[in-house]
Image (cartoon, rainbow, N blue to C red; front, side):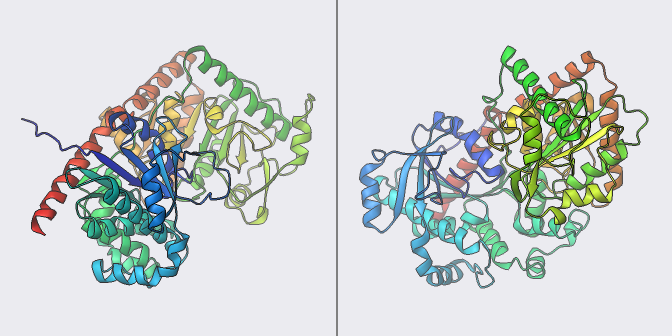
Length: 554
């Protein structure tokens, strides 16, 4: 007999990325919102930082009528909030809080956190203060809302995302013990730091002491708030088994539930619209490449790409470039390859010389200077992608079968060169490559297969591990997702595996490719929120039961 899960009446979620597009957590929250809004209509509230105060925020529509009487009460309590709707499917209620007034009380807030939970903020630097003041302010907002609108009869959940919201979760645990708390770490701050500092993370994970590593890498404060929150909340969660291993070793606490990241596919075009968009995307990418390179690449060119945050080693950009270099010498490669790196860098202006060419209909036979990049960078001489291309002696010359183009800006449709959004270009790719070294989940390969574009990832990404569990073996190209085994030390084998995969793909027939594209899309379907939301319901149940126990013990 399955036990009846306790369900909340109200849910609050706080994250630095509510109405504030920064990274993958934005995708988690914004794609899941529709599912939760349908299950808890206007009883789920997203709380974010009001970092856009005074500026136009395209993601937030303020509505002075929503929660009007509470808002006035909150203002009387000294809380500065704006209430409205998040401009995403589901249009959930969002509360943006101005946290700057709390800076004056920072030391007092930190002292209390040390007294109550032994949170170390002595070694704080960088974004620690900003995140913590937001987190505290979010906790105060929920406390105010609860006292004004709700009672002990209401089952209430507060879910905090990442170390940046830990202080607020602990504040609520102490001040409003009736609220059940959930803390979700999407990547441990110390694990990411170990990986980013070129230390072997995986082979030595069992031997690392999180507190000791935090001291060595100057991460004590972030690590401390993350660890204490994980230990004290009613339910601790993370996003994949691979990150759960980190939590167990580095935070000394395994997750109570793994909340895998789903998504909605309502942004994927259907039927004839899909085919038209794919055709258009290919045309745009090939036209730009031909203008930049002075070539005549045709529609049978194999277009591949990688994208995401500019984490050169963690996202595997280095091994992708290595594979492309080896591909230039591969005798089995049957097609020209146009390889994109769509990763935002320290971008300056769109190239005038490229723009001039884009604005006419001439065919060019000579490349522009620096034929690897679409926009100038502020640091042209110290850029990791350009440095590695130079080191590998890549040329983009007309006679080489592999051409590489770095698009170092956000693809928001207004970049000045391609002027298409990321998804509107992704649909035109033949294959995507995400050979991550550190990747708690991996939305980019998941988005790729949603657009029927087969992808290459690794088993150091949460998504790659999940795919292996779905197909019941190591994901291979015919499955639509090729999952490469990656370790701390097999960089060269990974590069060869990517090279061989692209080479094999170039020899496939149209029918074989169509089948692989279908398989890719069917894997994406299994990751929709309607399948993954059940894990959240389990977390709510655990949190509510543990909060009940806490209340009885008080």
